[in-house]
Each structure stands twice: as structure tokens, then as C-alpha cells.
Length: 454
Image (cartoon, rainbow, N blue to C red; front, side):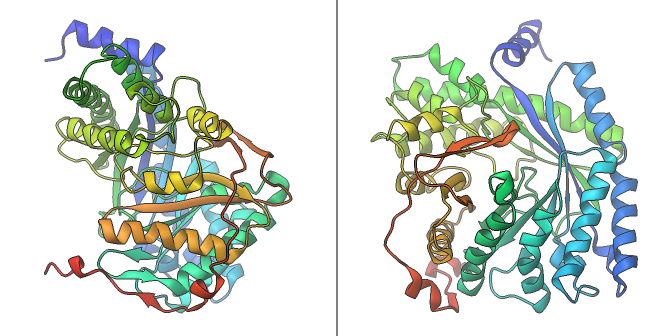
């Protein structure tokens, strides 16, 4: 039974502390859209997505209005297109045509983004996978709402270094093709290790092949709520701090559970998972970095940052899993630079480097996220950064990711401005020593010994 006090408390969180449901994401299987004819495949994709998602945005808005809970984004994820297009796509342009179909139907149903322009190549690549990866720069430079991801490593299989090397080139080319928009294409492209099948957050969302035909996932977010709660226990010991985070995460997740159940019932689609991540926005007071400062750091990046982030991530999960039986996706604290004003402040103060961010990714929800780097950064250096993050994911049996934006024509000291949820970012320096010979080896880094658990 929800008490009056809890209702008032939730209203306070929404009105003053930036609590929101970050996304309702409808996952749609496109396996039954495969066809030897490209035109037939595109038609099937359009028709299925439209039939399933035509009421998604309206339903989200109805729930917002009736319950007073902000739902920031309505999104769609689909089966990795490298699989769906494998029978009909023979060229890069063929795959880009499917991306155009995805973009068109996303606009037609009114969603913010559609994810799943993806390939799963953790152990090896098919010709179809390689074609899709090579088509990413064209696809992202000719669409507005399509998001792309590539999973190129896992604890079970190791790291596909051929794909790592290729993705360094792909990221650079995507940056070049979208340089007139501050290399915006790279903000819609993420490279994963251990990617989950049910992630509702962009740019990495795709509908895994183990999922049902159509499901609804919800991602919640409340960094501002957690920070406000911690302000009330300032100076208390770690036991009190941890209990406060857990209780707050429970309350935030219950809001997501309510929205998920309502959306599922109204759309007639099974409920998938709640992703209970702390996903920041550029809004003041909606920052994971500010939580770390409230825990006791002068700036994110100061000594103690990794320990504080590990504590935060763990307590968020412990509190959230008590609020829903189906927790999944990424679920933890995100540390994107451009989307978190506190992180931006830390970079500008000289407190936060890419190397420190990499250390933080060992204990947080994802990885190096929304980081602007100099436009002259080499493809091999980008590949090496990807390899480092994939290694962290493989060895620690966790999801890691890289979403970096080489800012073409810009250097350290300049700034990228995307607007909206993507925010803005100071360009961060990258290590200037080469890893080209390392990346050029190719092949596969084997899975670690602890992957042998059968």
C-alpha cells in the first residue's frame, strides 16, 4: 500500500530533484522480416515496426499526463540489422537503405531514437557483419534517429581484434562524414563488450535474439534524487550513506515499475525489464559527478573517486533489485562526460582525465561514454582505447563500452556543442604514444581462464 507521505515524497522528487523515467523502449524482433529481396525486406521492416509501435508515443504521453511522471524519451530497439539484412544486403548502400527505412518509420511513429543498426561479432565476423560495420558511417550521416552498436568482445569468447581495428577506422570515418554537425554521428555509435540483449538506453540498445517478439523495457534515472538524499546525511558514516542510497534507489525503481506495468498493459506487449541506471543529463542538479562530490570528493577524478563510484553503483543495484523482479539492461551509474555537467566541470578543472575515467569504468555501469577527443586522433589509438575497455569487460565479466567523438578540425581546449540530452563537451587530451603495431596484429585475444565455468 502506497501511503500519502510516499506520494508527496515522489512528487517532490519529480518537481525539484529531476526524477524522471528516462525512456520507454519497445523492443521489436525483425527476424520474420528477413527476405532475399531488399525492397521486400524494407517493406516488412517498416510495416512490422509501425504496427507494433504506432501507439507507443501516445501511450507514453498518456501515462505522463495521468501519473505526473516525466517520460523523457520513447524509443525502439530492433534485432541487429546485420542479421536481418544478411539475405538481401550485398553492398554498403543496401544496408544504408535499411537504415533509411528505420529512420523513416521512427519519424512516422514519433520516437526519439531507434537502435539496433548493429552487429554481434565478439568471436568472428560474417561477410554480412563486415558489410554492416563498413556501412555505419554512411548510415549515420544520412539518417537522424538511427543508433548503431557493435559488440566485439565477451568474457566467454575473448576480444575480436580484427573488429576492434576496423571500428577505429569506422569511428574516424563517421566523424569525418558528420563533421559539419560537430561529428554528431559518433554520438550515435557505441562499441560494446558483453552487450546485454535488453538494454533500453541509446545508443547501444538492440533487441537481442533471445528476446520475445515484442517487449517493453523502461529505464529510470534519478541522480538528483540520490544527491538530495545524501545531503541529508552529510558527515554520517558509510553504513548510513549506503542505506540512504539503497532506499532512494528502491523508491526510484518503483516509479519505473509502475510506468512499465502501465505501458505493458496499455500496449498489450509483455513487460521486459527495468534498467535502474543513474543516467545524468546536462541539467544542473542531475549529475553523477555531483553525487561523488556529495560523498566527499572535491571533484570527480580526485583520489577516492573509483571507491566512491563502486560504492554508489553497488548500492543502487541492491536497492533497485528489491523494487522489481525483472531488473536488467545496464543498471548502475553512467559516467558520460558531455551529458553530465559535474563531469564537464571536473574536466575543465583538470581533475578528470581519460585514464582516470578508464579506471572508473572498472566499477561503473558501462564505459568511456560521450567523450570528445581531438580530431587528429589516429584510428589505431581509438582502436587501442576500445581494446582497453573490452579487456576490462572481459576480465571483470561486465559490460563495458566506448563512445568517443573525434572532433574533426578541433583540438584540446575547444568544445563540442550538441544540445539536448547529448549536451556539450570539452575536448579531452589523448595519450600521444602509438599503439599501431599492437592493433595491427589482428586475430583474437582469447577468453580468460575464468570463462571456463561449464
